[in-house]
Amino acid sequence: MGAGTSPADPAPAGPAAEGPDAAAAAATGGTEEPARPEVDGGSSEPARAEAEAGSGSTASGTAEPGSTEPDGKASAPRKTRRFPLFTRDTARPEGGGRAASGDAPAPARQWPLLTVLGTAGAGLLIVALDPFAEAFRIGTILIGAALIAGAVLRWVVPAVGMLAVRSRFTDLVTYGLMGTLIVLLALVAQPQPWLDVPILENAVRFTIR
Image (cartoon, rainbow, N blue to C red; front, top):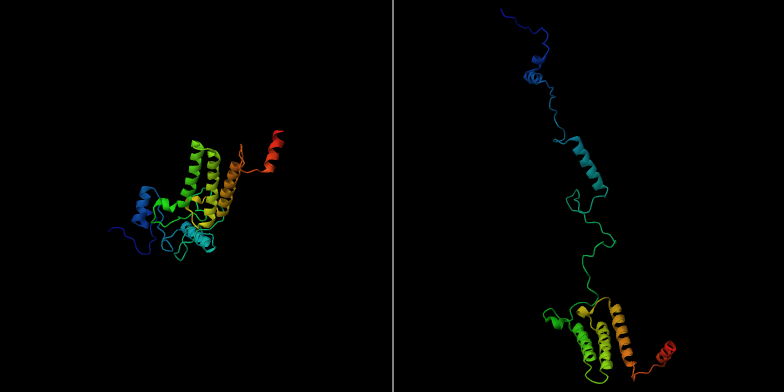
């Protein structure tokens, strides 16, 4: 009659008592820990800590520009008054719009600039060709008058197209001052000046004396 074990006998020690999994682990020479059930739907401790840190930073209002808030809306980027490092575009100066409607041809849209350039070009041509007496003086006066006309157009016409370079005040001062100086120099040019200015004569005599 074979040897048997009764319920009163103590359980045998060793891998055989722990079942087939333990016996297989003992045969391979390793110790396998039983799988632990994960808590909170399979999230680990580091992931949970990062999630808590992210929610805390969002709640405190220190989220990065363009990040997503808990309610699903993207936060607006932060506005700064600091000038950008690189200029991306150029703002149109005051009064720099088209002088005519968009349906008009290009010369009509830029007629103030073409008027000034045409008058100044005619003056330069007269000075260069010298077709008559006093051509130098008349051509120079024509150049100065073109700049003065540009200042008047900048003041009167609301939109002057490419004639507007900077602000209205700056263009007025620049065009007007340069045109006036050119006309005055043309009038007092020697010989036989058309305008006698005693102060200038005294200044010239004092400097060359």
